[in-house]
Length: 514
Image (cartoon, rainbow, N blue to C red; front, top):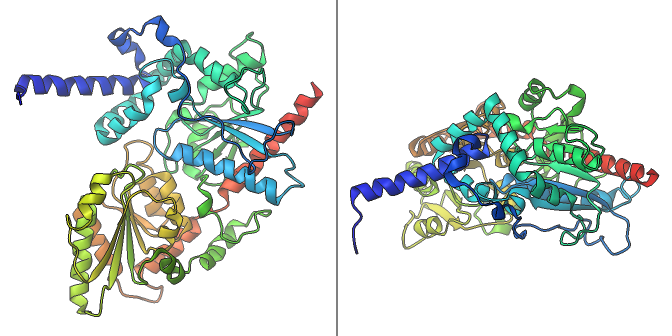
């Protein structure tokens, strides 16, 4: 094969960096500097046919022809798995509330969940946010650059200006669509709009002003309820917070304060926790009632019977380390697993117990097939003193977390919130600069984990925690487990859904009077 010259290689690398950097700057507010770089033709402004997400029915197929339903459009983008997971969690919560509290919530609530950028973005980079996110997540200096520039006043102004210039009409089409039948223009639109993404506040609010005033104003006149549900935890981009929303749900005191700095009033802010997947809600709970913060930790202790869960998963009932790399298996999972495996083997050798494995490791590689193959025999042979289970994508992460004693993960907000509900101490291996950076002090200050930026540090911490002796307050892991449970908010999803349901029901009553 013909070998590229060094000049060609440098040129290729440079072009890739230019493209990804340009896209990132555009997405966070610096489109002006790159306008001449791609000059989209006017014909490209026509919307592509939606392909990522259409409407997803709720209330267990209760949406039928002729049956009255309340409708909520949830705006998001698949830049990371947390936004869709939060949207799906709210959808599931509406189902549960309708089934378990029919007197308070008699109408089923139908959620129209849409990736507004992928499905309605007019051209590059707006309709390519998902692949661009993956590039910038890999080259974190690009992410840090675009995040910090986009958080400046000029960055946010430019983002708002160019988003409104190019995306107003296609996004208006999205927000005008029939939530029960998106392919038809029936004239009906959602009763309420909920955003679970930082770039879905400013422009959607202007569009609702326009829709509710028949085009008379983009600045005022909105009557359709609009709510932001923040899906970050210890830090968040300022575009999350807009004083024009009806309610802003935040998961932490840090973000409550961030919202108030952006002009959101205290009466607009509601603090419950993060919306998380149904598998992490309270087991056996009476969903018709909210438990108090004081008794949540005590109640959650009763839902973690590790021996039973391990047996159901085919795991041994021995100390267990869980290493996860997210849905895409990102985060150096191969090197982490090998380093931890070596330490577990060394720890077993020190104890001199030869009756079988004395600890085990579960590695969830997500969709990273190469990592899964690399860590599985015959590519990797593990010692006889440890049991190793290497998995791909799993849909029962709640069970694996409840079966484990230590979690090694990147500092994603959803994973941290889920781990705390499971009483699972965390070793944070990496974070995206910006919003995930604040998740490190959140975990450390709440006492259920730490950050280790090297595979050696991760492995040594695992060894230290598993080998720690008990004192009057218990072992290190037992103390961190208690701290995690105290930080847990297993009812947050249902609490948020109750408030949203009350709002959309009130809106339907208002519409009936028009």
